[in-house]
Image (tube, rainbow, N blue to C red; front, side, top):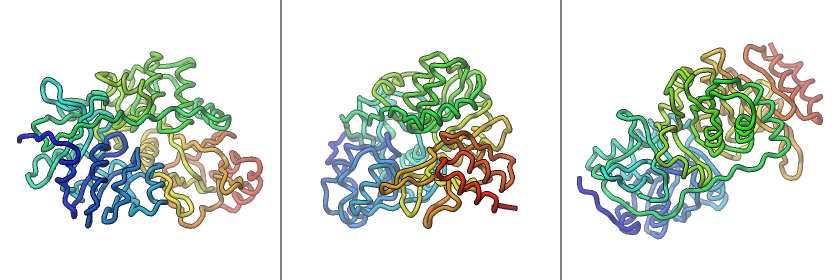
Length: 433
């Protein structure tokens, strides 16, 4: 195969007015190419598959363009509110591998680093769910693979030979040069409530535990407590690699020597954080990027030593059902790897899954409880009650594993905000059998 080096506009012209296109989640999306596609206004029926946009491409506001997103972030919410033709594609992150195969987009894209001396282009900050489909497209002469190379992205590594985390320049059809630095996600300073939640969560983490942390102030604060406090010998097996996890490495607290799976290095499927994180990841073999179907498989996660996963939620009902992506008809985020890591904790008694959330939220100027007797209409359950282990608010931890329906409801009511606790405790007595 002979690769063509094209301008973004020339590459965009290869996409037909009626066509299908896939972009990776978040940091894997080719933003220069998407911007060039947005310059066109001749779309008739272009379907784009992606998730967690980190920008607001004009493309998705054009008539004739339909965007199917597997994970809503601020960009997706803003596009939806502005009237863009955007729809949620409910699936956890791991199953997007099969969905990509089912949709079989004619045009596959990704960001990568420029070719090295051997012609290999690292997939950089994202392995995710599209690696297998990129390789299927490479093997199909009727499909196109467009790689946006960008020297600002770190050259990260996988696990050869099975998961090299790279494409060879001779495998792809088109190269486009991108110059925009990767998206910066700063660690937000925790509020007093978030700091209290993090302290409760820290109590579940012992020396040698394997950690999974997600996005936001609470997991960042937990990792900060681990970084600055006693203990260590931790392992990392996390869907997302963060600036906080980098600092945990830098503190000497991560050994990855007690993990039962992928011993000796941290494992992730994508990274988001600060420029310092991206610089630290460049050429760093202490962190390996593997496809999401490997990283997020519950049976793989459970092979690790004493896994502790930290995930957030929007609301939890007294049955222990968790809503983490859609409440009251409003799509806030997505399913992601939430259920995979929660489910994994139920496969080994020593593993723990922590669902962390503030006890209240402010909605239209009114304080409401996030712990509820019943979810509002059009709310979806992200994780079913039978998989949930521990729920934590700033008022403490409710351990649900092995508890009866009524015991679970009582435990959850006990960690609600005092303004709502009595009402929830009374409702809990009606739960059963």
